[in-house]
Length: 374
Ligand code: NAD
Ligand code: TYD
Image (cartoon, rainbow, N blue to C red; front, top):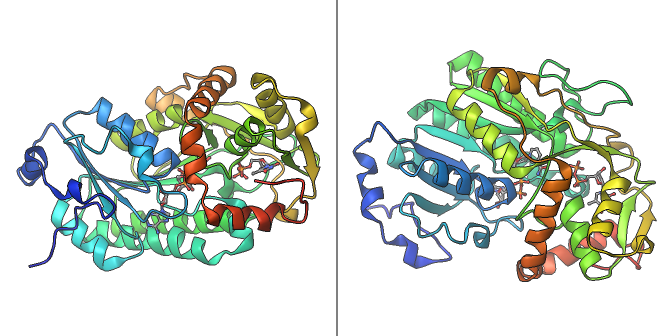
């Protein structure tokens, strides 16, 4: 007999099944069985925490490969929740995904799993094709075979490419990705459209702007700058720091994703942004101010992204606001205060997620400039 897929390879004690989960075979009409992929990463772990709190009767199964960005510590306090299980595995592994769907008969599926960092995609696009495109296709195909009520693909505003000084991206804006990361996410979005059009799979896509908050891996702007500032290391700003990003506190995105998942219209795209555009340099200066560190820590470096560096993102999120009555609850001041507070209280986490792999990566991106040490 095949061993159940539901286990935690890093923590064998979680193999003990609990009564609530055993009952998942007997469907409770009040609850949903939810597949969350990439739930050991930044947004996915915040989403699982949100769902288990809001829907205590739901069962959440987290399928994650545990790449450098996936960390079970992000789910501390959750792993013993009777409605939660972890499966270590790759979304591009069709056999595994097939067995998991056969075993669990998911009502809802949310695909967060992805290679998520632009700089890494410029160094090597291959893992992005495998996880973000092939992985999405495997999930779509298996979801089609077994049927789900909703399949939500977590996408990004980066699929739209770059804005000039004016205007905002709407859901019907053309898709014009500039980096390998953005191209891989755009390809997955197109596959989603295809599975909706061709096979009537109930797919929905969310495209959010730049998230920030607890548990974000310190390769992205905010956590990298917070960590370096805390350690009095140099803060590397690409170019002149004039690029603009539209920031959203992760909990606001999780609330919007959940609303779209439960109440959104299938076949639709929903932009999710908090109308919070800021120039990178302003963000970095704000972090330094909040940590009471000098601006002399800033170091402007040659832009490692070159032409792939999008100048500006800005989202028109009126669709999710009007249709689903969503609006962000955190402004930048409040969200950043909460984020910094979290990183201050979790400096051990920060150091533990940084492995030798991170140091290799860091050297590749910032290496020509040796004052930028990790
Ligand atoms: P992250 O890098 O923190 O986490 C990604 C998670 O996916 C990790 O736990 C990793 O182990 C897992 N994973 C990677 N490849 C996998 C595979 N083949 N099979 C199973 N698991 C795999 O990413 P994040 O910032 O939490 O982003 C989550 C999703 O949201 C991604 O799809 C990303 O494109 C999208 N998104 C992120 C942002 C942002 O600002 N972070 C903005 C818009 C959209
Ligand atoms: P990032 O957090 O990687 O998100 P994305 O590129 O997906 O928007 O980067 C946000 C912005 O910050 C982007 O314009 C690049 C810039 N940046 C730096 O200037 N220095 C850094 O060390 C990093 C990681 C990013």
